[in-house]
Length: 242
Image 1 (cartoon, helix red, strand yellow):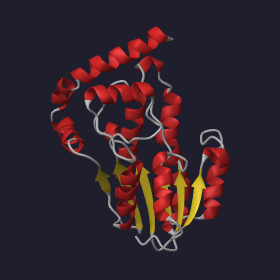
Image 2 (cartoon, one colour; image 1 turned 180 degrees about the vertical axis):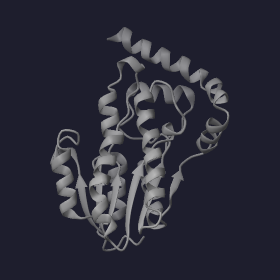
Image 3 (cartoon, helix red, strand yellow; image 1 turned 45 degrees about the vertical axis):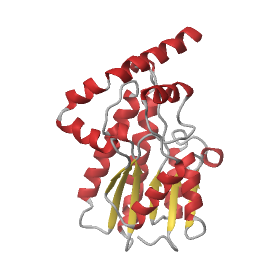
C-alpha cells in the first residue's frame, strides 16, 4: 500500500518503536497519534478513544500499544495484560470495520511478539495475550479475504526499548537474548505495510524455534531449562532486595 496521502492511526505512539516509526513516516501521511499524555489511559478511556479514531476515519491503523510483565504467574496483572495487548486492539478494530469495509483500500496492522509463538516462562499473561492476538489476526484475515482490507501481523523478537525492566534485561544478558533496535523494527513494519504482508516474523534463530515449538514443544521445554534457572535466580534476588 502506498503511504503517501493516507490517514494512519498509530497507538502506542510514545514508545521506542512508535517514535522510530513516526520518524520514518514523516510528513508523507496524515497521522493520528494515540498516546497516554494526550488521550489518557487506553483502558480507562477506550470508548472516547474509539470515537476519536472513528471520527478521524483512518485508512491504516497500527496497533503498537502494549506492555509485558516479567514475574511469577501468581504475581502478574492478568486483567491489564489481556486488556492492553489483546482486548483493546480487538475492540478498536471491531468498531472500525464498517468504515474500513467502505474504503477502496485499508489495512490493519497488529504488532505481536515472538513470545506469542514461543511460550516463554514468567511472561504467562503477555504470552497468552500475544498468542490470542496472533489467532485473532489470522481469523480476521480469513474472514476478510474477499474484501479490500489487508490484515498484517508483525512479530518482533526482543527490542531494545524501555519496556524491558532491569530484571528482564539481566536475564536477557545472562541467556544471550538478542535485541533489535526500535529503528530496525520500525523499518520492517513500514515495509510490511507497503508490501501488504500477511505476517512477518523477525529474527533468527527465533523463527526456527517458533516452528520447532509447533512441531516438537518438548524440545523447547528442554531448551529453556537454563533460562528457567536464570529467571528464578533473578526473581529471587528481587524478592530478597525488597
